[in-house]
Length: 171
Image 1 (cartoon, rainbow, N blue to C red):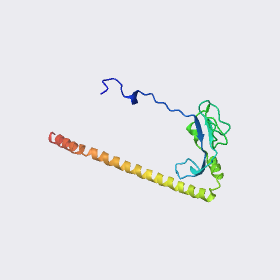
Image 2: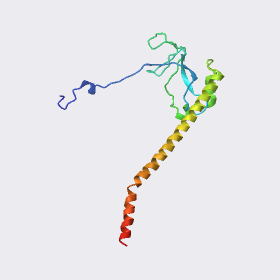
Image 3: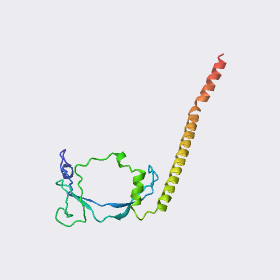
């Protein structure tokens, strides 16, 4: 029982997390399998990566140009980049054009033209299947709504017939 006071050290302790360096590892770009791509072949990150990581110091805003970390230990970095002063890109700026997708796949020697062609056919087929599935679902929903309306009108029909019968007997 805390007697109304805050005796729980977990709730009263101020927690803080900070980072001193940023290490960026660049992975290869290869063919993906997402059929929702806006145009061209879908891209994905492969398992291979460049062992030369980019290292930046986050504490003082300066890059570490010597390839060592802040403690003077050799890092796997040949180049560095700063994340300070960068403007966040919009969603539309993050989308790749078909031409950029083709270029990124072209620079990967493990991706052949035949592979790209096969993935394009596969994604087109998946898109068509999704469209057909969506159309079937819409038709099912329309049929269900029609059935619901018919069901909702059933109680009204006897009432209307009873009312007509009453009107005829009162004539």
